[in-house]
Structure formats: C-alpha cells, structure tokens
Length: 86
Image (cartoon, rainbow, N blue to C red; front, side, top):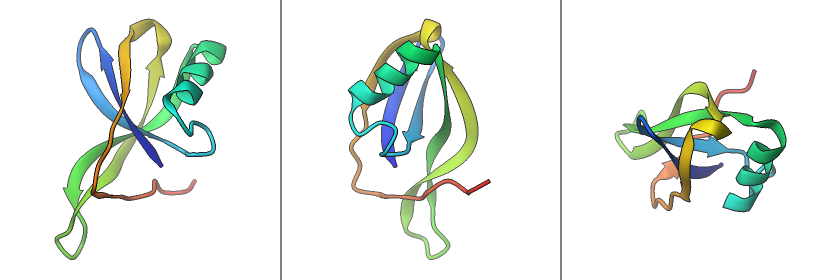
C-alpha cells in the first residue's frame, strides 16, 4: 500500500492505494482525472495485537476529484497493514 494525505475544503484524511494502482502520486491523480473519484481505504494510526504502532485500514471511502484541494504522499516508518480482502 502507498499512503497519501488527501486534503479537502472540509477535512483531511490518510488513504491507502494499492501500489499497482498508484506507485506515485501521479498515478492516483491520473485515476482521479479519468474517473472523477477513487474508492480507497481510509487509514489511521493504531496498535497491532502485540502493541506495535501501525497504520491500519478502518473503512472504504470515495474521494471525489471535485472536493480535493491537494494530495500529498505520506511517508511513515510504521508498518502499513493491508486492507481486508473481499
């Protein structure tokens, strides 16, 4: 997963995008420009079962191109927990 901070007029969230879908920020922007929205996982800082701090998925969200002010790549030293498979 690649994490991004998505900033809108109302708030900001951290989202995860599968690396094959968006290796770099340009990949995410390209997906948004083609479809106008992208379904992604929202991530938050949490603890793994053994107490280690991780970035973990909490829910799927849609980000809309029309609502975005900017997108920034998020660098973290924390482990990124993959989202559940459907």
